[in-house]
Structures are given as structure tokens and as C-alpha cells.
Image (cartoon, rainbow, N blue to C red):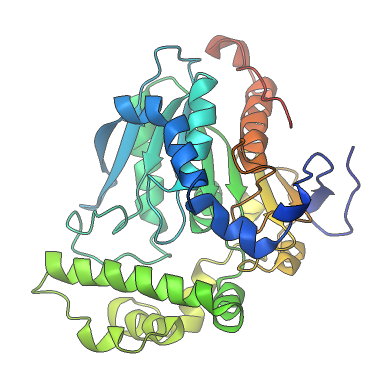
Amino acid sequence: MTRALRSHVAQEWATDFRPRAWLRGGHLQSILPSLPPRRTWTRWQSRALRAVARPWLLDCGNGVRLQAWHSPNPASCGRTAVLLHGWEGNADSCYVLSLAALLYAQGYEIVRLNLRDHGRTQALNRGLFHSCRLADVTGALRAMAARCGAQPLYLAGFSLGGNFLLRACAEPALPERVAGVVAISPVLDPDHTLRALEEGWPVYHAYFVQRWSRSLRYKQQCWPDAYDFRELLRSRSLRIMTDVLVRERTAFADSAAYLDGYSITGARLLTLGVPARILAADDDPIIPAADLARLAPTPLLRVRRTAHGGHCGFLSGLLANAYSDRYAVAQFAAFHDSAPGSEQHGPPPQRPQGR
């Protein structure tokens, strides 16, 4: 059903994703999931898990705390899905809730994690978020594993969240209960992504400048003795904002070293400890698909590519489960089926039906 691509890393073309003709634009796929009526439909679909969600304050070590939202499942299949949003998203982002709703219907308990300084959590930690704070996420995973006991953890991340989780799964500190990871439209080479934002459709650059500026203003409000971003925010440039903050607020020598610090191309994923899957679209306007060929070859990593889907879109219809959601559920079931002693965790959840 798939044909292999010529690349060092195992890749395949998806033949089971055929969006309607009017949905085949990369920009539309990227933007539409966050707009009504799709946003309204997603919140309706996720109403059950949101109704029972309770906050978890996670001790991630070294005084760092992150917030997560845990939804217990009365029809639990004995597995927990951990979902992580992208940059300037949060635990209530539409793509997170969309996948969470489908997994919840399959019997998974859900944990939706907020990265540092996301989801209005700027007051929790004095230190400023940046994308190389991998210890935040690995610490959060250890804290979740302790709370979930014997339940295996199934990880799914979007964009920068996918990048974080893939890096976490290549770390020796990964909890043993992690069964596998699915990354949807993950950031591959951050420098190339920054260039795409600068040189592509101006809407994306303006969107992230606006969201990041709002986050930094709130951080300053929470910690007025530590931060004054007024001059920085006048630049209205992702490149300038990154350069200044890296120089003033991190130990990196320059922004080039910082961006390379969270790249997952090259040898970065050779130490993966669990099965990992990447879903990426060739028409993603933010993540250049050519960078997929630069991922390290490892038997634990597989990439599925689609011609359409944009950035974290993958919509086959306006009011229907996204292909990325169905793909993640199917991969979680496959992780379970291939795990040693998987029968101790109960029968696998019913696989979703394609459209």
C-alpha cells in the first residue's frame, strides 16, 4: 500500500490520505483547523475529556514546574496518552484537543502538557522558555510516569512539541514506561524553519511575532524585577528577537549555536530508545520536507509523507477526524501490539476507520 522513498531513513508515502480537492492547499490545511467551524466542532468533540480534566503541577527537577491537564477515563484501556503542543500553542490547542478526543474515545487516559511559559503558566518559573530546555520535558515525563504507575505512556507531539518528544525519546533519562512516540509535522532543522517563516507567506511570521510578543509581555508582568522586553518587542522580527534573547538569556554563543541545539537532523536521533514515527506533509509551509532526508537512519524511526496536509493540518473533511489523528491512534495500537508482554495491559483499543 506504500512505496519506499530513496533516503537513509525509512520513509513511505501515504496512500490512504485523500483530502477533498478544495482542501489540498498547504496554507489552507495549516490555518483551517484553528478557525470556526472546525474549532467549534473540535471543542464539542472533546467536551467529555475537558469536563473531567484536572490540573497536574509536575515537579520536573531543579525547581522547575510544568502544568499538565489529566483526564481520567471511566472506560480506561490501561494506557495513557501524553500530548504536547507546538510553539506558542497550549494544552487547549485545537490539534491537541482533536487527537485527545479520538484517543479518549478509544479508552486512553489523557495528559495534555504545557511547555514552560505556555498556556498562561509564565508565573510558574522565573527562567524564560527556550527550545533547548529539554530537561523540562524529560523531567515532566518522569513525573507523569510516577503518577501513572504501571500504565504505559504513548507520546504524541505537534510541531515543536514533536521535536521535543523525539529528542526526549533519544535521552537516557527516558522513563521505561514510554511505549513509543508519534511526531506530527515536527521541527527538523530550526534554522530552515526560521528562514521559511521569514521568506514565506508573511501571515505566519506576523502570527508568531504577535503570539511570542504577547507571551513575553505576560512574562514581564509576572516577573517585573527580572524582565523588561519593551525595546526588544519593537523589532517585530523573529530573527532579531531570537538573536537578542539567545545572547542575553542563554549560555549559547549565538543564535546559530542555539538553533543547532534543538535540531533533530544528523545523528541526533540515533540514540532513540523507543519506536518513533513522523508524519509530515510535502506542502508544509513551515517545515521544509527536504530536511527529512537528513534524519539519521535507525530501525526505530519511520517517516510517513503525504503530498498534502500543510502544517499540523491533514484534514480530509471540514468536520471529520484528521488523518494525523487516525494515524497516531493506529501507531499507538501498533506500539502496544509489538510490545513484549503487551497482554498485561488489556486488549488494544479499536483501530479507527479511515474515511
